Image 1 (tube, protein in one colour):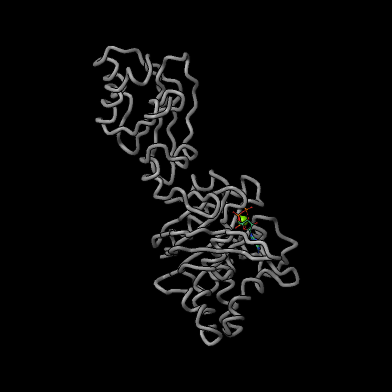
Image 2: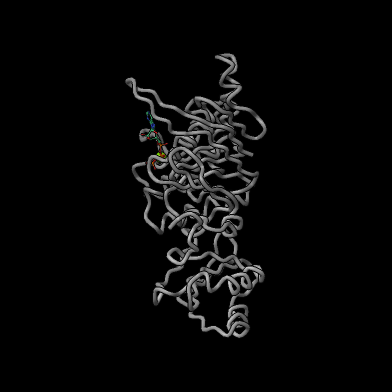
Length: 343
Ligand SMILES: Nc1ncnc2c1ncn2[C@@H]1O[C@H](COP(=O)(O)OP(=O)(O)OP(=O)(O)O)[C@@H](O)[C@H]1O
Ligand SMILES: [Mg+2]
């Protein structure tokens, strides 16, 4: 639904150059909620602004719903109308809502429809329908200043939906909100995703946002995507930073000469019988340092941190046994095998 390839953005100001995006290949499937997470300055906002061509990419292409937006933008003023139309099929939700304070809630939602040249009657019907959808039917005549943060963001979402978009982009939509309100806004985005079949690309620096509503996620660092995939793929990737952050499990090793392993399972698989089987087969005492079961991206995930006696070299066979049972095994740092060449 959204594909970027080799997307690059270099800002030039007063002789200085900043490479905010450094060849980003992103692929968001139709109907999914896709989260991009990264630290401040990683290039997240630049990415989302390039996806809807609010910012002109320096190089690379952006395709949304089969349409190459970068090609449209490159064709000069006459393609402007086409680009505006394509853009109206992409809704955008902002961190600070960006509502016009002198307009009522309804008039704020009508704004994109005015730009598209729709009649007054059509605009008003659509705005009221959308306000109802986001749970603000009774606030149509209020002004933004009379609303709470969460209500303002609902207006922002209703406005983003005015052009019947296929795609919704959200840049830190919940980071100005308290945790309770954040949950309700995320739930609303999830509901819209399901009800309207809306594809959602959201940017956040909060892992909890990814955890609660994303089907897929990407980690951005210094203008590049360093990890990406469905939640399930990430959890199955050895050493995935995103998986560890999405699903943390803690527990300290009890002594130097121990091997600590994180065992991850998804869906049906059960760890407990495998662990006791391991213990019996190899006659070793296994301690459980920590364990958790949670739902990530709608998927049941369990993780257990276990400790085996002896160093990693002594445990190659038991580790192999666990992997053969289809469990994801990550060796926790400090007990990793010594890399060849490193002394
Ligand atoms: N208009 C601009 N002109 C020059 N440099 C810019 C501009 N916008 C962003 N940058 C720079 O590009 C880099 C990426 O910025 P961007 O806003 O995309 O990061 P971000 O991941 O959204 O960060 P945050 O989490 O703080 O919002 C930063 O180094 C930033 O200073
Ligand atoms: Mg940003």
